Amino acid sequence: MAYSDKVVDHYNNPRNVGSLDKNDPNVGTGLVGAPECGDVMKLQMKVNPQTQVIEEAKFKTFGCGSAIASSSLATEWVKGKTVEEALAIKNTEIVKELSLPPVKIHCSVLAEDAIKAALNDWKKKQASAAEQPAAAAQQ
Amino acid sequence: MTAITKKGTVCWRCHAPHSGGHFCAACGKIQPLARGTDYFAFFGLPQKLWLDCAELEKLFHQLSWKLHPDNFVRAGEYERELSLERSSQLNDAYRALRDPVARVEYLLAHAGMRKEGAAKQQAPPELLEEVFELNESLDELRTARASSTDDSHLASLKQHLEAEERKLETKLREVDEELKRIATEWDAAFDAGADQSQRKALMSRMNDVLNRRSYIRNLVANVQKELAEA
Ligand code: FES
Ligand SMILES: [Zn+2]
Image (cartoon, rainbow over all chains, first blue to last red; front, top):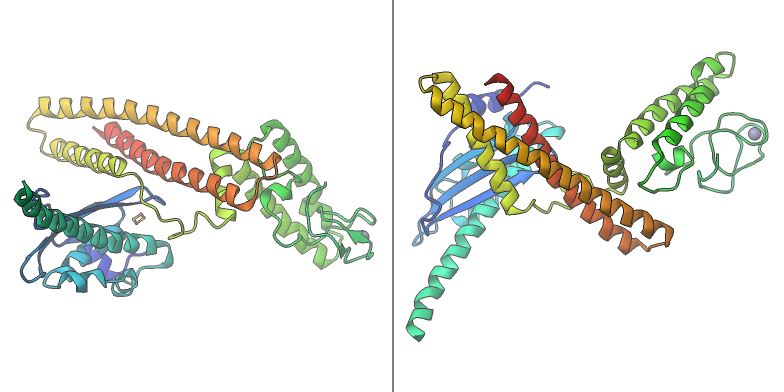
């Protein structure tokens, strides 16, 4: 099976590989896997709490070329978007952009899931950070 | 040959009532496969997960002999086609049922539970975490090997991975045991005539185990590959 040029490009020059501090309250971390093949993907985003804009995104993927390309593309896409906009990204858009064949669709699903997982993690952190001072005030 | 369902059809050749099976009981002609025939029914077996492998092999040989295209060289085109198609299905069916894990995979796939995106629950986070960390160690090993300046570092990495590999092998055995236990439950439920929702629940548990198994298997293979090169 031949990879498309865009996949090869992301594979050879992955954007935004690396990690962010997962203990930072403004960083959301998503770790997801594809049971079909056993591949795993970690995606992290740093969100500006005032503007809700995603300022930084990093990923690390242990998986096939399509999964690496999908996550690399995902980090490019989410940067500069608001949380709501990023949550609206669909795996089908990734499939289209990278011309993934049907057997590689699950690799793009992984990237969509990772975005959602990371932002959910971030939301949870925000919520518990908002609760904290209230709890302290009660004492 | 029993159990291939779909009653009420007739033989395409002699019009005798045909209750399933690969051949007409009256005239002996090869028959088209009833729709929805699964691989278990293909061998005339119930949809149970415990199988006597010797028995299955015997059935396979009998069928492959009966269905073999050589027996149909002088038959009409329709029968030749049926025999060709059926022979290749027979091989698929045998391959799917022969191995106990593949058998569970097949059962779930046939019920539409192994489809991509279907039942897409994630593996337990601890497992994903572990898979991720081990992959990072593998990366580290690759880097250390490439630079090869610090032999003791490389050696300790190797040792760490060897220990991890042994742990993974144990985990794989545990997962297989778990799968076996649920398969036994499935067979008991089958005999007891369990309803759809009970079956679904068992299948979804098996699906979980298969998912976990696939991460661990993948990891074992990666670790072994790296260690072989290290
Ligand atoms: S093959 Fe599994 S993520 Fe691509
Ligand atoms: Zn007949």
